[in-house]
Image (tube, rainbow, N blue to C red; front, side, top):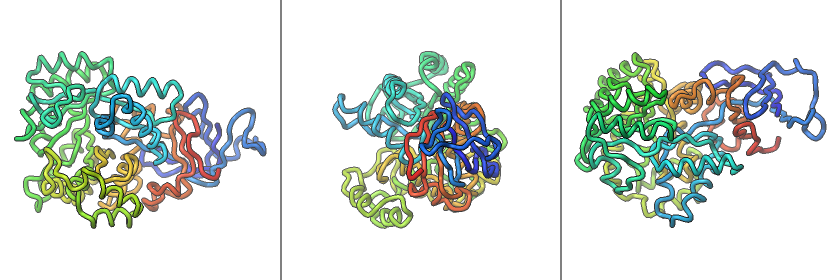
Length: 432
């Protein structure tokens, strides 16, 4: 495949390269060069020498987006066993409609991840999947205290047990996920010594460790233990004071620890049941009026969520949005992930809302793009092979008709999505 006449945005935050031609072969970017260097022209059928040729028409080619934090099991638990895999595969296919070509599952059965990957390799059109398998949590910790689904979590009470459990997972998963915090409704906190053992064991095998936190203390302990990425914005000690956020931003910037705040998680949990929130989503282009009505009719809409009270979630959201620029200024590598979709039309729209919230918080749009491309790939150890439009990388890409560095709507509004390419295959296209 050749994509002609595009501005290449490589996913690193660099300025786009205009008027480029991009060749894809065997699922990877093979060549990127200025347009016109190769004088060959596509035939009237849109092929040249057996290659598919796309006229980019001066558009913008960037890496396919990444959903860096979700739980596919949560999308199918209420279904009969026979319907679960088809539902998850349908969801992964639906992500492509939003320009999302890679999805990271942060807690679910290993067998599910394997089966999904096998189905994709067999030809099912779906976003690429990277998965953690079951999370490591404290004794009777979250999420076991919520639903008791043992395929999603493993209890760990000591460093030795942590090593044993990680060793069982290492050859089956892409990265390791831990839940550090212990709450009154969430069982015991994962011992810090156990977290340190997890990190040491996983890093010894070249695997990244992502750590779910609740408080600033959790976050500091996770960083000290060597966590590669912090999952979720923390609960501030004083929501009116930004000094704690400044200190944490400095810590993450100095240590190179990535940060996935999942703003849209706290927005949904804090504003669930609020009709004004649904109206805002319509105005912001995330939902249609029909979508909003369907969300309001869901049994979960407005219901209390175990472990995360609405008032605390809203505090977490407001503080995280207000302080997000501090993290950017401190050089923290931010990552986009949505986690839940109880108040979103589709799983894909939740990630797009996260990007919109980043922009509304004041993050430069070049950085917004990077949160869902280069930083997302780096977070799971794929920095050089995915999440970027560079020679040799996996050819996942999104073609836009307008510059995502000038208006966030150019990135999140599907009307600007001209084509989606997944592992070198054109899977979605509009008018090209």
